[in-house]
Amino acid sequence: MNDLEELVREISRFEAIIVDWDESQRGVVAGLKRAIETLHKEAFARLIKSVKQESMSALRNAVQDEVVYGVLAYHELVKPPKPSLEKRLQTAIEEVRPSLKSHHGDVELVAIKLPDTVEVRLIGTCNNCPASTFTLSQGIQQTIQAYCPEITKVIAVK
Image (cartoon, rainbow, N blue to C red; front, side, top):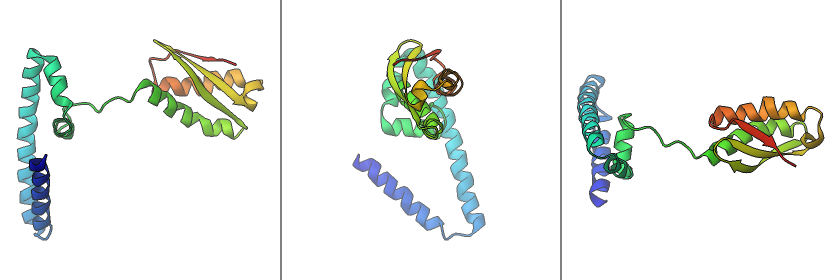
């Protein structure tokens, strides 16, 4: 890791040097940087294609390294990790919560029943509201499905 830290310091030193250069000089450096990055991206893409043919598990293991992942992500050769289902559900619930709270209600995630169902509990005035079915289907369920398309059923439980 010391070599990596030294490399980062070296890059910072070069950036500090060129900051005072005139625009045309910085443009030459930027062009050189783009050309090198394009070459590296193509080389990484070919390497990934080759490694995929031999061993997907080797590729998955390599991408677990934060430096490898960071460089491949910089070159847009790997997708960012998808947040977990639970995290996406919590994000969806947080999105609808202000609207519910404005009517003195709330919602909480009760259970995830894979592969396609979640149970929620309506709280406060939402629990006994005549419009709770509409709130569930048009507010909560639609928002959950926007974040979690794999969820097809949202069930309100007491």
